[in-house]
Length: 548
Image: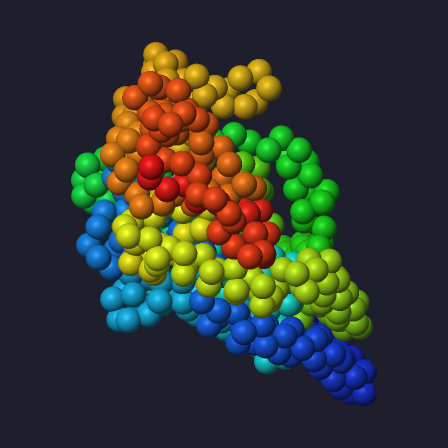
């Protein structure tokens, strides 16, 4: 940090000097939010110790993401034409690459991905704490900042240790911003490399990091220009390599497909009036801190603009992700991570007795996050029940008893673990169906599945993707390629309607003796509802179709 910034801080400290007794009291008071942070860390560690080794999915897409990592480990393409065995998710590949590496070293797929998420969660906490400690010149505010990050675990739907890509993305965006400011002579180059990794972790980087680039321009226009040019070059090279290596399919899945998804209109305002509320204390502290630095002028003003750009970029990424169809509470962690830096730093820099107010706000933030964690109903959503484990064990036993591949759209990685092949996940199929025309009531026009002329409004690659999935699935079902297809009464029941062509016999009429598959008698599970995931889409009560 420039010497002028430190001199401004020292000058402010002299102007607001406190009697020794008052200064000592304030210093000791920082142990209160630190104690709250230690409690948050202990609760997080306790939960992770039980969730990390759990062999089944806790959230409904964990297993399907592990299937993607399994493909990497076995040299199969991630981004390709869809088929009944694999429909790519709209996610960038870095998590799958890392998970595939873990699988290659003998780890279970879900465990490998959870370890990536857990490592990035801890790394983010360490980075946030170091950043605040360095910028404030004090240890306790840094430890409090780390504790606040862990305190968000429950509010953010217990997402920190799930086999998802969000914590990987957050860490890379945060360390990009930190490196750009504090990375030394070639900080712009190192930061551009990290920014490219952030894009490969999640395309949402294109919403967050441009704001950081604007902040860098305010900090030092030369730094900003170098960073921007290096980002454009490295990101273009990475995206271009993916495009060429996948015959253009990566561009379709990662950039064209997300544009076809709808928006959740009530989040345009609801994000600011509802979603953001639990982190309001940190946001207010951040605003106060930036305003205080702005008033100091000089280098401190440029630093304020840079930090404000980091925070604004995180909030922007959260807002647009929340607006996107499928955006869940976990996307709030983007803005929250930035607030965990800006809020405690602002509280540490408050002059004189004003620090009492800052400490009170931090304690209120810990309390609010704790209340939101309890509202998440941890007894139901945090730790899996014995019935949940038993249901998955029963499903795996059923799959292992089948004589060939098994397709389970609602529960990923079960058939892969059992050595019965992979099947396209229901969420990935639903994402692709977003390309279909919509009826006035907002439902998909399933007639387009038969009348392909209704798809003329799609791009050539979009038409190719829909046709590849429908035709490939119809052929696989008619040829009885799967020894069983497991469908959930709740969640994936639309499977029969979407793939009616394949499930109908030569007479083209489903539900007759000519059909290639028939429903097996009896339930697959002793407790059909117990297999529902703790988080995410509610999928349960599976039944099986077997070849006639």
